[in-house]
Length: 106
Image (cartoon, rainbow, N blue to C red):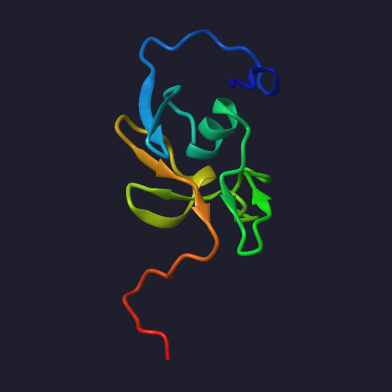
């Protein structure tokens, strides 16, 4: 379901960017961030907390961390801080994700 009413209408881009979200194809416009593409696609939560509470982009400027999403296999990426590109693979996060760094938990 498209949530077009949340955004100002803009002219159709000459070329739509194709990406996948949880193995489903979606499209975005050149210059969109991942967070904006997810909001424009459905408005659904980008992630769920450990307790199952839905979260989605809130500040759109990298402060709140509510837009964390897995991008091309890398967890905990701030969707509002990265531009979409063709072929990008996105996954919603559910619960905690390991920190990147290769360290073992003590």
